Length: 125
Image 1 (cartoon, rainbow, N blue to C red):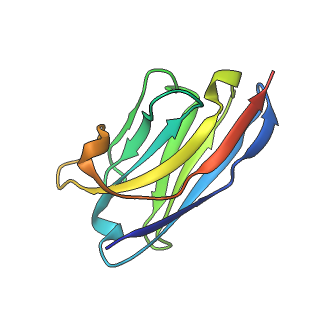
Image 2 (cartoon, rainbow, N blue to C red):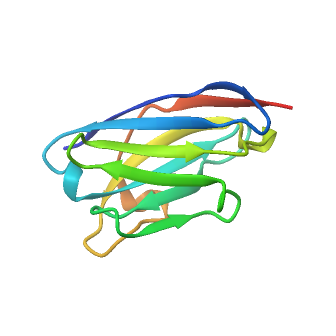
């Protein structure tokens, strides 16, 4: 069992930065692949980034590549999403998720077993 709680969302101007945090708990957090997803109003939830259980592999959606960075600290049971050069189209509820993957990263929602409640990110133009 893994419990996840996101924080760090807010309102920023275009071009600004935010750092999202995801606090995990449970025995299997350290061996779980972690991901960030987002859902904008009226749209389906979409993949943003994923990181392997030991942090040696990452994957990003093309829309955020070069602007966002996912990282984790297994000692603290934390996952982060550093978001730079933010755009209005990045506005969404961002959620972290945990899944089991012995080999690396996970891209698809149905590969994840546990989800947080989400944190709102709003980018003004």
